[in-house]
Structures are given as structure tokens and as C-alpha cells.
Amino acid sequence: MQYEAMRQQICAVGKLLYDRGYVAANDGNISVKVAENRLLITPSGVSKGRMTPDMMLLTDLDGNVIEGDRHPSSEGKMHFTVYRHRPDVGAVVHAHPSTATAFSICRKPLKTPYLAELVLGLGEVPVTPAFAMLSTDEVPKSVEPYLAEHNAVMLANHGVLTWGSELWQAFDRMETVEHTAKTLLNVELLGGGVPLSDEQVVTLISMRGQYKTLAQKTKGAI
Image 1 (cartoon, one colour):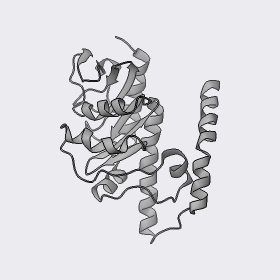
Image 2: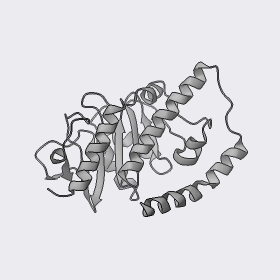
Image 3: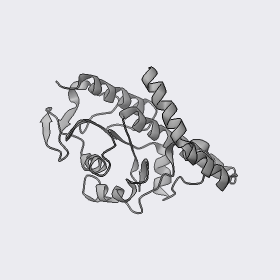
Image 4: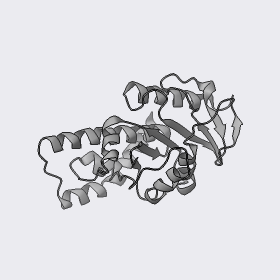
């Protein structure tokens, strides 16, 4: 069985998604690019909180199974599209965190700059304009317009898709999307808030490179 350490990491992230309520039952899917034209992807029909490393499927970018005896996630096409359009991406996470999913149902993007973390680390989170039927080509086509300039997208009536250079970054972005959605919901319930100024937003955006460098140095130290 190839890529044992990464299989275990996928299981750890799946358990976090389940324990935090970002997925229920057999919801959600995770993939990691482990080599050129090679992915590890979660199986279909298994709770993300009860996966074991041997359940992961090794596939190519066309979804052909190279190693494993289960069916890969039925939403694999969505993952493959992300990797094809973003060669810098190393991992993709799809989940149904309840607050962000509610925003997707209401077609409300997360874009008002209330939080420095949203501006600095994640950026605006758009929502696709219409529901795309599950497990069809409609789903990957619906996310294509957002891949180049965003780090996450909410799928209309479906949940959230995030991606990153590696798996923990993709998971962290999922967590940030849900945290932001919860905060914005509370702001709306309180009657509206005061967003950051245009000048503050520009300053925060200019700091992205600095924070990225610090994160890389920290990772190297670990």
C-alpha cells in the first residue's frame, strides 16, 4: 500500500471534519495529489469519521483506479477539475458545514470585509449561482470560474469546496469559511456591522506575502 503517511493524514482530517460537524453520515470527500497524475481520494459511502488508511483509492486525474478495492468518491470530477486548473494545488476538501451551507442556499457570498483573517488569509468566498446536480459534469463546470482567483467556493445548495498547497491548508480554509459564516450570521442577527475601510483592506492585502513567508519559516522549523 503506497503513501501510508498521507493516507493516515487524510483519515485524521476526515475525523476532524466529522467531529466538528462539517460533515454528517457519509458526506464530504478529500483528495491529495501525491505525484504527477496521481491522487489519493476518499471512498464513496463511508463516514469521514470512520475511515481507515486502506480505504483510500489511488487514482489518476481521469478517475481511473490504480490501487484500492472500493469506489472513489462520486464527486471526484470536482477534485480533478481543481487540479487541472490549478497546478499549484496539492489537496482539495469538500464538506457541508451547516452555517456556510446555509449561506450557499441563500446565495450569499462571504465578501463583506468584517474580519482581517478573511481579507488576509482566505479572501472573498463566492457562491455558485445555481444548484449543480450531484455527481454530474455540472458540478465541476460550476466551480471552474472561481478557481483562478479564489481559495474556496460555496456550492449552491450543496456545501463548500476548499483547496490548498497541502492538506492542512485546505482543511484550515474550510474551518475559516465556516467560522466566517458563523460570524457574519451573528453580525446580521445583531442588525449589521461596521466593515473594515478600503484603506485597511488594501493594507491587509499587502501583508499577505509577509505572513506567507512567516508561515513557511515556521513550517521549516518544525
